[in-house]
Structure formats: structure tokens, C-alpha cells
Image 1: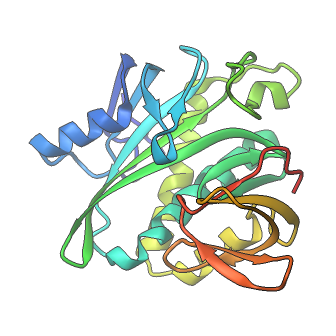
Image 2: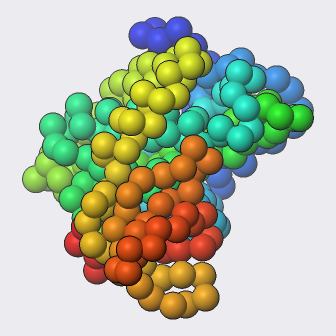
Length: 259
């Protein structure tokens, strides 16, 4: 089965009833061969899905989207790999807004937020050779038809919850997602990194809002997100007017933020 509405994303589609991790499967595939660019690995049940910095992705079997896409962004310098993250995050956001007809934000670096609740996330694992990217595995997990979540998750939601119980056709949604990803990826390939960065900035969750944060050393502060750097650091201006840039491990949003 393949997607007929794209040039390459989803043209090769490997579907499984269950996998520990679609990203892990894609990485193993890359270690043994060179799959066609745009190859998608999809699982109805992902038993050991991962998010950013080792967090677990918990989902109900058969209710959600869990997939990975293999890309070869040779054209992108390693120092600009965050542009790929922006392109993919924008594609997912474009798609979600089209489906739900609601305002969707991107919580840095690439979580999908509806209001103040998380509906999905993206994990990109890049391979670098010299100064350029060699391959990228783009893992995407989206809560679609799930209504009940593990109590350990602080603020989950799903497309179904946000649509008053309406259930969605997962295959139709995935087909549209592939189209959006291809559009944004080709925009990146055409060198439109500034346009992508501007679009990402506009839909950044908490932009210009006073929020609570915690530094890596445990200290807490309030500040305002002002944007991101080309390398993907989050820029925050604290209550004293001092602006600093943080990587993913250096700062976290405090729960209970209503930004």
C-alpha cells in the first residue's frame, strides 16, 4: 500500500500491527540498507515509543498515529538541522489545523499543543557526515482517537477529545499528513529556511507570555519566550530583562503554565 497523492513521502509504506519503536525499526533499516527516501514505517501499537530526552510515548493500541519517515537531507548543513525540525513541526501543525479547524501551537521544540494540552510530539534522529546531514528518521506520534490516558501524563488531549467524541479515519489522516510533510520538506529543500523560521515563530506556544520555567540546576524563574536561535535554542527574557538561550536539557516549562 502506498500514497498516490505525493511524490515520495509514503510511496513505500511498511505497516505493522505492533513494534517496540518505529524510529528504532527505521534506524535498523538504515544500518543494513538504503531505503527509498520517504519510506514510512507505521505501527498500530508502539510498545516502547520515545519522545524527547528519553521520555516515553504512551498510547492505546489502534487509536493513534505512530510512524517514522526516512529522509536524506544532504542539502542541509548540520548547523542548520533545526530547520528540518521546524519544517516537520510546521507540517504537522498545518495538518492538525486543517483536520480540527482549531488554532494549533508548537511547544518548543516540536510538541503539538491544542490550547494548553499536548496532542502529539516529534522525535527526529539525524545522522551527520562531515558538515551535512546524511539521513534523518522523523518519528511522529499523534493522539487521535484515544479518550483515556495514563495518569502520569500531565496534560494530554486527542483529536477525538477536541472534537467532542468524533472518531477519525486513521488512514485518511495519515495520507493527508504525508502530503503536508512533503510540502514543507520541499520548501526546506528549496532553501526557504527564513520563511520556515518565521512561520514557526508565529505559532510558538507561549510566545510573548509570562511563564514559569525551571533551569537544569533546579532554580525556578519567570520569563517571556522571545523566539529561537537558528541552531534551535529557546530564547527567554527573564523578569529582570536578561535574555538567555537554552538547549533542551537546560530548561523546562513548569506544569500549570497557562501561556
